[in-house]
Image 1 (cartoon, helix red, strand yellow):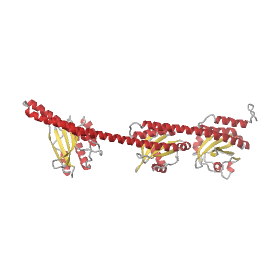
Image 2 (cartoon, one colour):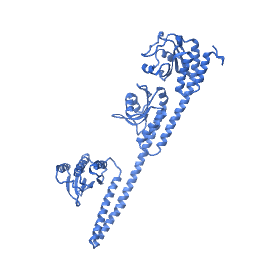
Image 3 (cartoon, rainbow, N blue to C red):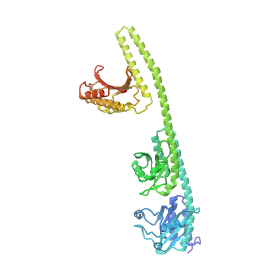
Length: 525
């Protein structure tokens, strides 16, 4: 029957309408869905599918119509393209069957699959290359597909190929734009000084919207297993589970090699791209996306971005090292100026005051001069301590451990003890000495805290050289609350342990109302 508006047969009119619908939208997923729906309309088929072929000539995606979501879930993963479906893959020519179960290549159906009898398959080509195949089954009223159905669907498939190509071009352009925006955001953000940890987090947050991933992680391969450095849109535990699932591919990517997308059991796809830089030479970008078709399109772009990100991370590290070097230079200059200029002037002023004291007549004036000299000596010690703190750390040293221990006892004491350090404490101390020093200080602070009478505790730690040229580590703790008792098993214990190290312990009154404990151990044997 012909259409009264155009004079065309109804079937031809249906093809034209279907082509017009295809050209009204260039979003690739929607185009594929409309192709399947239109093919069913043209041929009056109950079930339809469009199988998209991958590089290995298996079905990487199956866009279906006619089977509800619950039934699809019960059926399980879509077929890879064997049996009847594989006939079109191996020989891309139309196939029309009255009863597909009778064909020798028929595999049968998996459990929960609806019954299907008649079959029509048409290849979809783009520029002479097979993109995929249209599969139709169950023509209405139990009829079989006709030669006219085959002709009409072949003509429609040609138009569908053009629509797919246009949608793919647009999708590729949009992907390129998204990745360019991600690259621009990354470079702009990393122009300012930042830490490598923040830079890695930023890279993960740039990747996720660019590739449309459900979640992105940056994972470093360590001897004990994968270590998550940053995530975006996904928990670290989920990223670790993903790496374990795609273990072989992750191991390969961690060696700096390119690996194809990996489909996992839950239907999602994992993209892996190595960060081929100096800073994280064994790290991998892990992106979890929802479909294999999109993953293949994003894979090369993600790999290229990861290479750019590795260069950016190396730059961040280089800038940080340059700034650290500049800081060390400035600290050395400041330390040198303090030592060569300030301390020498203070020392000269102290000598001048000592000479003036001999000429002073009144006891009150002499006392004030003595106090000024004592203040100058204290200031010189403070500046020398600052000089040593300004010198670059060659290791963590013991200073951080001392600060941490004093902060730990601040709550029990009601205040934070004062800490003064002298000498090259940043030079690594023998482990035995540093452990014993911290143990002694902990025991002393515990005793002071139990008395609950101290309002001020002063701790001084330093390295000094005696007249014989031997170097010693010295600890002095001054307490104004009577917490440093001259009796008790704790004092006997630290004396014995100090003796074993070749050191000594002393305790006694200092200023009125104050008690001072001294502990020292040799550094040179």
